Length: 121
Image 1: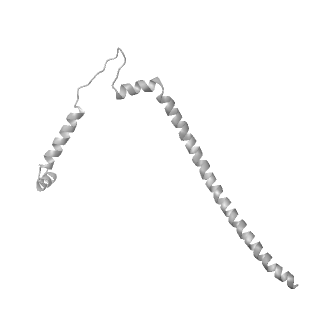
Image 2: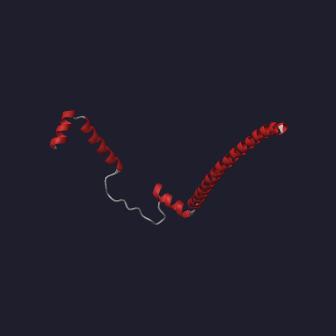
Image 3: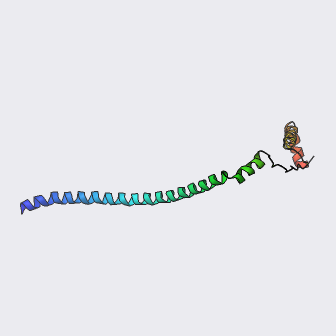
């Protein structure tokens, strides 16, 4: 009976250690399953993005895209076409007029700016 008691305590301790180790392994596996699910979602998202980039690359290699870019960015026209330029204020003139307005307001003293603000002079 005494030998049984002496063997029972170490067996119980070893059993508890095994249970503790197995429970930690199960928790780790369940966490890695969640990571795997997250990675699967990320993979599908990246595959969709890759497909979209492939389509865009294929479009950019077409003659239609090259022609559109030449018209928009390089202001090129096909043979026999004419460019119609409408009169209007150019961008440089707009920028200069904005600078002039900013400079004229910048030279006013602060109290004149307040008078203009409140009384509209």
